[in-house]
Amino acid sequence: MSNSLALPAQSTQSPRTGLRAMTRAGAAWYVPVLIGQFIFVAYIFYAYGLPLVVGDLEGWNAHLSQAWVSGRDIGNAAVVAHLALAVIIHIGGPLQLVPAVRKRFPTFHRWTGRAFTIGVMIAVVSGAYMLVVREIGAWPLQLGFIVQAILILWFTYYAIRHAMRREISTHMRWAMRLFLAASAVWFFRVMIMIWFVLTGGIGIDTSDGTGWFLDVMSIGQFLPLALYELYHWLKSNGGSASRYAMAAFLWISAAATTVGVALATLGMWFPVLG
Ligand code: HEM
Image 1 (cartoon, protein in one colour):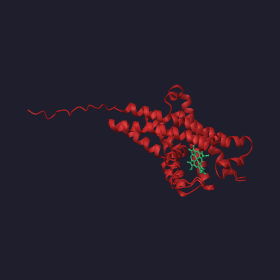
Image 2 (cartoon, rainbow, N blue to C red; image 1 turned 60 degrees about the vertical axis):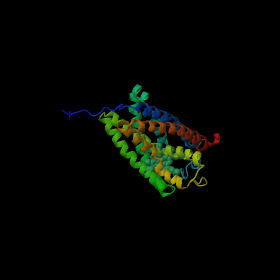
Image 3 (cartoon, rainbow, N blue to C red; image 1 turned 45 degrees about the vertical axis):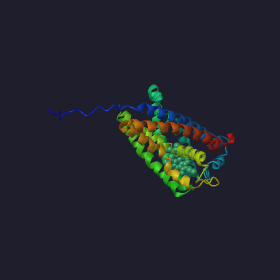
Image 4 (cartoon, protein in one colour; image 1 turned 120 degrees about the vertical axis):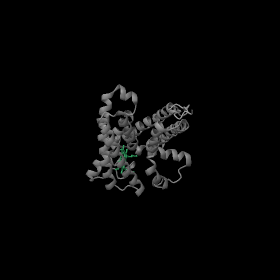
């Protein structure tokens, strides 16, 4: 008699195959991201904090056009708020995602989380105001800012909601999305530097900061977010080959990000060192 209830052949692949390789590669990629965001904060202090201390607010305009316009009170306040909160976002955000910090300092994690979410909310409002009152480049650049604002509001809502319900793994997922969306300004700059290395700057006119590649990057700055979705999907659905391919890609990204951070530091944020 044939056995109609025969079990399907056992797969030789464990559901966890390739997971550790992917997680390790993800952690390796995160190292230059964390360090690079701290360097970006140092740049904000140097470019905007130093002129503030010595009373040379016009000095801001050397880094950001129309950042300070005498007599434009609300507009200037929006720029001040935006940059001050960028400091909190780029110091607090990367630390929030380090597991050891979360485990050892849970109170710090909670308070930094609150400061971060309030920070991104005010950054969205002040950024939207800057978008309206200042002359910001071409429409793709403006579209990039609008997309960023929408993503930040969406991700913040779910990150808070799941944190309040103590649904920690779902909270983590939304928090990671929020971090990647809030870091778009940073990714934009680092990816441009990587592009410079690869192509010599095709599609970028350095004389006036325009060009088709910069327009493309208005959406390209969300590439890390899209890759994170793929990474997360592979964790539960991927086979070993696709997971190892993702791990290899993340190692290459870690190297590229290291180069991009080094070049952004020496060529853009602290050109005095170059
Ligand atoms: C929440 C995350 C955000 C952070 C951390 C952030 C940070 C920054 C920083 C540091 C700068 C100055 C860049 C430099 O000196 O190189 C900047 C510029 C700017 N941001 Fe944001 N920002 C965020 C979100 C937004 C959003 C959502 C908007 C719009 C709704 C926005 C609008 C702007 C505008 C218009 C500029 C000036 C760009 C230019 O003139 O080239 N930002 N932002």
